[in-house]
Length: 211
Image 1: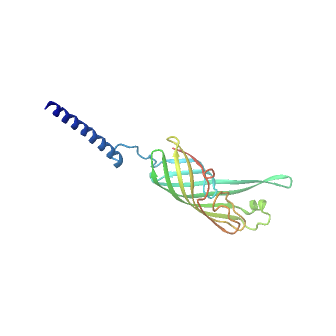
Image 2: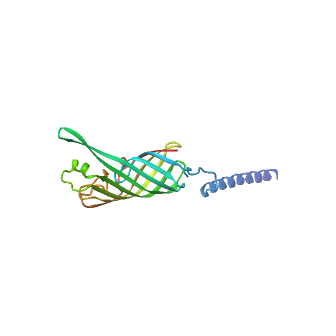
Image 3: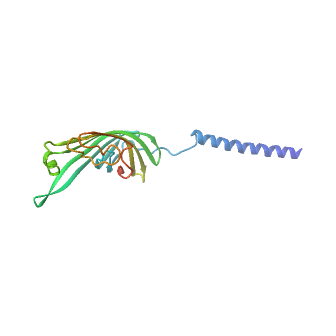
């Protein structure tokens, strides 16, 4: 009888331990167990270096309206040093883009986002003539970008990112002003370039510092 009771207690103990193990596993898979939350970026402001899908590169500014919604601004100056009449003249052009990004997947160490950006490149006539003596008008190059971006947190205030996506570039007759790489960025003058999977890992890197 004692042996039977001892065996019964042993069996109940084993079943109890098994039940605890099953409950723990179920809690993990159902999300009931404690887990790391997504990084809180609500209201944070970032500044750094960035290049977009279409080739706009320079100073990047970001603001998180909420943890899921971000506003983007990217500005840069394109300088060309042209030898002329025994001296060097500078042809300056402006590049910039603005848009939004929606972070649809967020974790403690990385975010995935999809966005929409409108980019503009401008070079006035005198500056353009240094590059193209036959030019008769200032040049405006416009592109639309839909970037799919990965942003990885290197520390609480630093992130490294890369993107790919869709690029639509309306190239002016005087030639492209953006210096993009990959699909959609190599369209000839006066045409429209469309690229899926535009850009490249190296060409679209960003390094941001967040306050």
